[in-house]
Image (cartoon, rainbow, N blue to C red; front, side, top):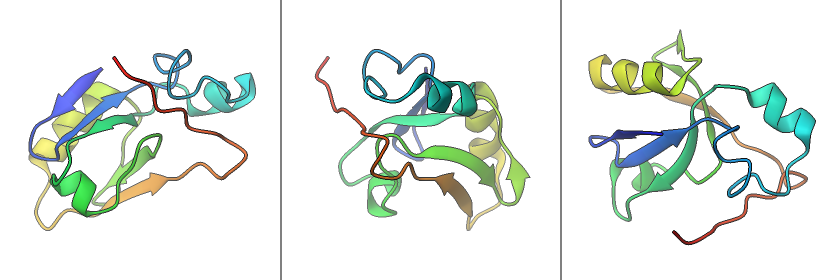
Length: 102
């Protein structure tokens, strides 16, 4: 799990979220996402929140640059030219995102 203060979000891998956010997701879904960065937390009123980035969204690209892991996401977001364009995969309704406390 890694934090991006400028964005106001925390990235985790799907495997790290298996028992929480992706608790009801299929094994094949979690395997397909792999190590890609998944939004596991956003700060209310942050840039991520304001842009509509939500829990369970999977980061694919930043300014057309592919992002495959959580550590890479933080470095890429921090170094990206502004305005920054982020491309996400948003799971459909068959993948239920479960919000948990703690």
